[in-house]
Length: 150
Image 1: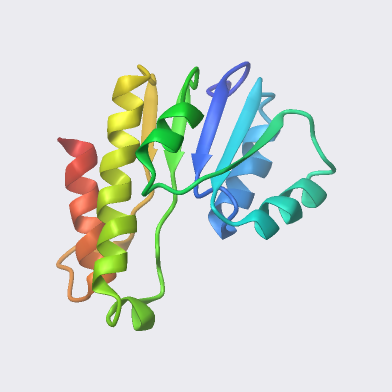
Image 2: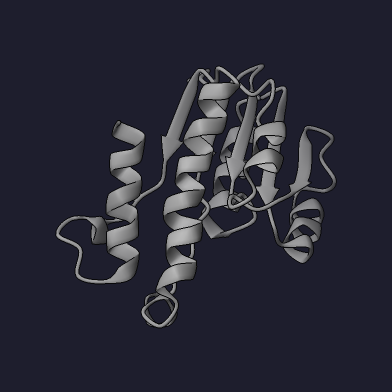
């Protein structure tokens, strides 16, 4: 499959578990570049080490809550994979407002930035917990799915 060959890809939340695995698989398809967007400076460093400082990787520090930074990071991108989220079920139940800021408002920001930059493809990473949600995380991901569908 040549979906990523020669393309500029952004992985929002790219320093997490899924982001690392996506990066590995996408690199195998010879993209022009992969922009790893995440707020965690230390994890950016670990990604650089993990992939031997591959020149196709661009480490961009930023937060999905910050629309202007996200919009700049997605300029010239062909494909966006949105994997950024607060995910700890036990912690989110006591930090609902923070979950909404990242998982809902952050998703709105990703979609808005994609539209503003004419991104060709955007993929939202969700969870089975969004189906008939019973907790904050599931409810946020349910809303994220609706945001992407809309």
